Amino acid sequence: MSHKNFVIIGGSKGIGHAIVQRLTQLNHRVIVISRSLDQLESNPLIEYIQKDITKDELSPSELPDVIDGLIYCPGSIVLKPFKSLSEEQFSEDFAINCLGAVKSIKASLNGLKKSESHPSIVLFSTVAVSQGMPFHASIAAAKGAVEGLTKSLAAEFGPTIRVNCIAPSLTDTPLASKILSSPEKIQAAEQKHPLKSIGNADDLAGMAVFLLSQDAKWISGQILHVDGGMSTLRS
View 1 (cartoon, rainbow, N blue to C red):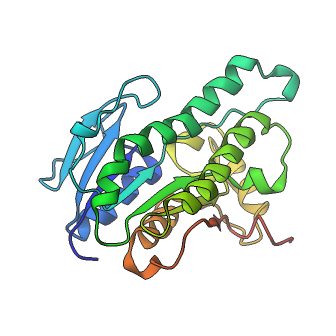
View 2: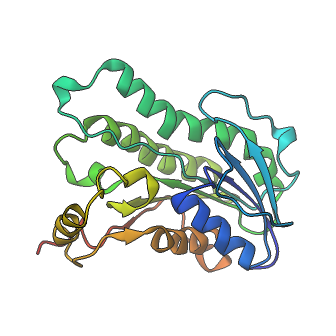
Protein backbone atom coordinates (compact mmCIF):
# COMPACT_ATOMS: atom_id res chain seq x y z
CA MET A 1 0.00 0.00 0.00
CA SER A 2 1.14 3.56 -0.70
CA HIS A 3 1.10 5.83 2.34
CA LYS A 4 -2.49 6.58 3.40
CA ASN A 5 -4.67 7.98 6.18
CA PHE A 6 -6.58 5.51 8.34
CA VAL A 7 -9.02 6.16 11.19
CA ILE A 8 -9.27 3.45 13.84
CA ILE A 9 -12.00 3.59 16.46
CA GLY A 10 -10.94 1.59 19.51
CA GLY A 11 -7.24 1.37 18.68
CA SER A 12 -5.74 1.35 22.15
CA LYS A 13 -6.10 -2.35 22.99
CA GLY A 14 -6.50 -5.80 21.51
CA ILE A 15 -7.31 -6.11 17.83
CA GLY A 16 -7.43 -2.35 17.26
CA HIS A 17 -3.95 -1.88 18.71
CA ALA A 18 -2.60 -4.72 16.58
CA ILE A 19 -4.04 -3.02 13.48
CA VAL A 20 -2.39 0.28 14.49
CA GLN A 21 0.96 -1.47 14.80
CA ARG A 22 0.67 -3.13 11.39
CA LEU A 23 -0.37 0.08 9.64
CA THR A 24 2.38 2.20 11.16
CA GLN A 25 4.95 -0.44 10.22
CA LEU A 26 3.81 0.24 6.64
CA ASN A 27 4.37 3.98 7.26
CA HIS A 28 0.70 4.91 7.10
CA ARG A 29 -0.75 7.76 9.13
CA VAL A 30 -3.24 6.52 11.74
CA ILE A 31 -5.79 8.52 13.72
CA VAL A 32 -6.73 6.55 16.83
CA ILE A 33 -9.98 7.38 18.63
CA SER A 34 -10.38 5.58 21.94
CA ARG A 35 -11.75 5.98 25.44
CA SER A 36 -8.29 5.30 26.90
CA LEU A 37 -4.87 5.89 25.38
CA ASP A 38 -2.71 4.36 28.10
CA GLN A 39 -1.26 1.48 26.08
CA LEU A 40 -0.30 3.41 22.96
CA GLU A 41 3.26 4.33 22.14
CA SER A 42 4.57 7.70 21.01
CA ASN A 43 4.83 7.63 17.23
CA PRO A 44 4.84 10.57 14.79
CA LEU A 45 2.58 8.55 12.47
CA ILE A 46 -0.16 8.28 15.12
CA GLU A 47 -2.58 11.00 16.18
CA TYR A 48 -4.61 10.29 19.30
CA ILE A 49 -8.10 11.53 20.10
CA GLN A 50 -9.52 10.53 23.49
CA LYS A 51 -13.25 10.07 23.05
CA ASP A 52 -16.02 7.65 23.99
CA ILE A 53 -17.65 7.18 20.61
CA THR A 54 -20.93 5.99 22.13
CA LYS A 55 -21.33 9.15 24.22
CA ASP A 56 -19.24 11.92 22.67
CA GLU A 57 -19.78 13.71 19.39
CA LEU A 58 -17.32 13.05 16.57
CA SER A 59 -16.94 15.93 14.13
CA PRO A 60 -15.62 15.48 10.58
CA SER A 61 -13.34 18.44 11.34
CA GLU A 62 -11.43 16.26 13.82
CA LEU A 63 -10.55 13.79 11.07
CA PRO A 64 -8.26 14.03 8.03
CA ASP A 65 -9.64 15.74 4.95
CA VAL A 66 -8.98 12.54 3.00
CA ILE A 67 -9.59 9.16 4.67
CA ASP A 68 -8.48 5.96 2.94
CA GLY A 69 -9.93 3.56 5.49
CA LEU A 70 -12.10 3.41 8.62
CA ILE A 71 -11.92 0.51 11.08
CA TYR A 72 -14.46 0.25 13.89
CA CYS A 73 -13.22 -2.10 16.63
CA PRO A 74 -15.23 -1.48 19.83
CA GLY A 75 -17.23 -4.43 21.07
CA SER A 76 -18.72 -6.06 24.13
CA ILE A 77 -19.04 -9.56 25.55
CA VAL A 78 -22.01 -10.03 27.86
CA LEU A 79 -22.92 -13.70 28.17
CA LYS A 80 -26.08 -14.26 30.20
CA PRO A 81 -29.27 -16.31 29.98
CA PHE A 82 -31.96 -14.39 28.12
CA LYS A 83 -34.12 -14.07 31.24
CA SER A 84 -31.23 -12.27 32.99
CA LEU A 85 -30.69 -9.74 30.20
CA SER A 86 -32.38 -6.39 30.74
CA GLU A 87 -33.62 -4.15 27.96
CA GLU A 88 -30.94 -1.70 29.06
CA GLN A 89 -28.27 -4.32 28.37
CA PHE A 90 -29.61 -4.87 24.87
CA SER A 91 -29.58 -1.09 24.31
CA GLU A 92 -26.05 -0.75 25.65
CA ASP A 93 -24.69 -3.54 23.44
CA PHE A 94 -26.47 -2.08 20.42
CA ALA A 95 -25.02 1.37 21.14
CA ILE A 96 -21.46 0.07 21.47
CA ASN A 97 -21.46 -2.32 18.55
CA CYS A 98 -23.81 -0.78 15.99
CA LEU A 99 -24.68 2.86 16.73
CA GLY A 100 -21.04 3.69 17.44
CA ALA A 101 -20.17 2.32 14.01
CA VAL A 102 -22.95 4.39 12.45
CA LYS A 103 -21.68 7.56 14.13
CA SER A 104 -18.10 6.86 13.02
CA ILE A 105 -19.11 6.19 9.43
CA LYS A 106 -21.20 9.37 9.26
CA ALA A 107 -18.27 11.47 10.50
CA SER A 108 -15.83 9.80 8.08
CA LEU A 109 -17.99 9.59 4.97
CA ASN A 110 -16.94 12.81 3.22
CA GLY A 111 -13.28 12.02 3.84
CA LEU A 112 -13.71 8.50 2.47
CA LYS A 113 -15.40 9.86 -0.66
CA LYS A 114 -12.34 12.04 -1.34
CA SER A 115 -9.96 9.07 -1.37
CA GLU A 116 -8.82 7.96 -4.81
CA SER A 117 -7.53 4.54 -3.74
CA HIS A 118 -10.53 2.21 -3.23
CA PRO A 119 -11.38 3.43 0.31
CA SER A 120 -12.51 0.77 2.73
CA ILE A 121 -14.63 0.43 5.87
CA VAL A 122 -13.97 -2.58 8.11
CA LEU A 123 -16.43 -3.55 10.87
CA PHE A 124 -16.43 -6.45 13.33
CA SER A 125 -19.10 -9.04 14.11
CA THR A 126 -18.95 -12.43 15.87
CA VAL A 127 -19.29 -16.07 14.93
CA ALA A 128 -22.28 -16.18 17.32
CA VAL A 129 -24.44 -14.42 14.69
CA SER A 130 -24.18 -17.30 12.23
CA GLN A 131 -24.01 -20.16 14.72
CA GLY A 132 -26.67 -19.48 17.31
CA MET A 133 -24.97 -19.91 20.69
CA PRO A 134 -26.72 -19.97 24.07
CA PHE A 135 -26.30 -16.92 26.33
CA HIS A 136 -25.28 -14.72 23.37
CA ALA A 137 -28.68 -13.10 22.68
CA SER A 138 -27.69 -9.50 23.32
CA ILE A 139 -24.31 -9.45 21.58
CA ALA A 140 -25.55 -11.59 18.68
CA ALA A 141 -28.49 -9.24 18.16
CA ALA A 142 -26.19 -6.20 18.12
CA LYS A 143 -23.60 -7.81 15.84
CA GLY A 144 -26.35 -9.15 13.57
CA ALA A 145 -27.29 -5.52 13.03
CA VAL A 146 -23.65 -4.78 12.15
CA GLU A 147 -23.70 -7.50 9.50
CA GLY A 148 -26.88 -6.06 8.02
CA LEU A 149 -25.34 -2.59 8.09
CA THR A 150 -22.26 -3.93 6.30
CA LYS A 151 -24.22 -5.33 3.37
CA SER A 152 -26.57 -2.37 3.09
CA LEU A 153 -23.77 0.20 3.06
CA ALA A 154 -21.64 -1.86 0.68
CA ALA A 155 -24.52 -1.74 -1.79
CA GLU A 156 -25.19 1.96 -1.20
CA PHE A 157 -21.57 3.20 -1.16
CA GLY A 158 -20.31 1.12 -4.09
CA PRO A 159 -18.45 1.39 -6.33
CA THR A 160 -16.54 4.14 -4.51
CA ILE A 161 -16.29 2.78 -0.95
CA ARG A 162 -15.92 -0.87 0.00
CA VAL A 163 -17.52 -2.14 3.22
CA ASN A 164 -16.68 -5.50 4.80
CA CYS A 165 -17.05 -7.17 8.18
CA ILE A 166 -14.82 -9.61 10.06
CA ALA A 167 -16.57 -12.18 12.26
CA PRO A 168 -14.13 -13.76 14.73
CA SER A 169 -14.64 -16.48 17.26
CA LEU A 170 -13.28 -16.12 20.78
CA THR A 171 -10.00 -14.21 20.57
CA ASP A 172 -7.31 -13.73 23.21
CA THR A 173 -7.72 -10.00 23.85
CA PRO A 174 -8.39 -7.86 26.96
CA LEU A 175 -12.11 -7.94 26.09
CA ALA A 176 -12.14 -11.73 26.56
CA SER A 177 -9.92 -11.78 29.65
CA LYS A 178 -12.71 -12.93 32.00
CA ILE A 179 -13.59 -15.84 29.74
CA LEU A 180 -9.93 -16.84 29.33
CA SER A 181 -8.92 -16.24 32.93
CA SER A 182 -7.14 -19.56 33.57
CA PRO A 183 -5.13 -22.18 31.65
CA GLU A 184 -8.05 -24.58 32.04
CA LYS A 185 -10.51 -22.14 30.46
CA ILE A 186 -8.10 -21.43 27.62
CA GLN A 187 -7.65 -25.13 26.93
CA ALA A 188 -11.41 -25.73 27.01
CA ALA A 189 -11.95 -22.89 24.54
CA GLU A 190 -9.24 -24.23 22.25
CA GLN A 191 -10.83 -27.66 22.14
CA LYS A 192 -14.14 -26.21 20.93
CA HIS A 193 -12.47 -25.01 17.73
CA PRO A 194 -11.72 -27.33 14.81
CA LEU A 195 -8.17 -25.88 14.64
CA LYS A 196 -7.77 -26.57 18.38
CA SER A 197 -6.59 -23.05 19.11
CA ILE A 198 -8.05 -19.65 19.80
CA GLY A 199 -7.18 -16.59 17.78
CA ASN A 200 -5.06 -13.67 18.84
CA ALA A 201 -5.25 -9.99 18.01
CA ASP A 202 -2.69 -10.26 15.24
CA ASP A 203 -4.72 -12.96 13.45
CA LEU A 204 -7.59 -10.51 13.09
CA ALA A 205 -5.35 -7.51 12.37
CA GLY A 206 -3.89 -9.34 9.39
CA MET A 207 -7.33 -9.76 7.83
CA ALA A 208 -8.28 -6.15 8.57
CA VAL A 209 -5.14 -4.76 6.95
CA PHE A 210 -5.72 -7.00 3.92
CA LEU A 211 -9.26 -5.64 3.54
CA LEU A 212 -7.87 -2.10 3.66
CA SER A 213 -5.32 -2.85 0.95
CA GLN A 214 -5.45 -2.73 -2.84
CA ASP A 215 -5.23 -6.54 -2.80
CA ALA A 216 -8.86 -6.50 -1.61
CA LYS A 217 -10.14 -3.88 -4.07
CA TRP A 218 -12.65 -6.38 -5.53
CA ILE A 219 -14.08 -7.43 -2.16
CA SER A 220 -17.12 -5.68 -0.68
CA GLY A 221 -20.25 -6.58 1.25
CA GLN A 222 -18.64 -9.68 2.74
CA ILE A 223 -18.71 -11.21 6.22
CA LEU A 224 -15.26 -12.79 6.60
CA HIS A 225 -15.16 -15.59 9.18
CA VAL A 226 -11.78 -15.64 10.91
CA ASP A 227 -12.73 -18.11 13.60
CA GLY A 228 -10.54 -21.22 13.71
CA GLY A 229 -13.08 -23.05 11.57
CA MET A 230 -15.86 -22.60 14.12
CA SER A 231 -18.50 -21.31 11.68
CA THR A 232 -18.27 -24.10 9.09
CA LEU A 233 -16.37 -27.11 10.44
CA ARG A 234 -17.23 -29.78 12.99
CA SER A 235 -14.61 -31.68 14.92
